[in-house]
Length: 238
Image (cartoon, rainbow, N blue to C red):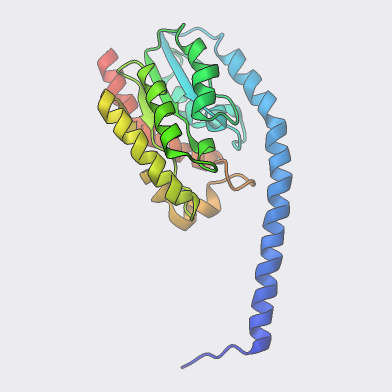
């Protein structure tokens, strides 16, 4: 049976789509303000957290995702989820800076990192480079960052952006990340594959209202991408 949608039906569908897009745009604006207000709260949480003692030192390099922006609590970031699985014996130093690019991580996070002797290191950085991606500059910065890491550091590729043109740029950036990691023998957490696998379900259920940062469910997926490499590192330490 062939279903024919008349002109009126097409107009109704078009109006519904426009109203939905307008709702998403307004929702994004509200959430961007809300998440911006959360930045100092999350930063303070991690400053306080690093003062707690622990036999194992876990250091994270990253951006707002390391800080947990978008989660209901800072501890629900992927860094927090990883730390929780490590138990009470871990001390966490989260060097992540909201809005950080790879260059910002080099200039503002590496100086503090070089003063530490971490047992576990995770690095997830580069999502903020995607909008204005310059592959050659990104490659230089990634190489400079990775050169400063210990051989046991775990680096992740970038998460799926799901839609073009962002996803196309992510694929280019991830090739650079993986090649640089391979040259240095660094373990790579497959964040892109893990997030892309979530598909439309992930797009609709695993993001905060700004449609950029993960929510609690999303951060659990991110943490799971690191889990095998983290487990391997813990076996090396035991």
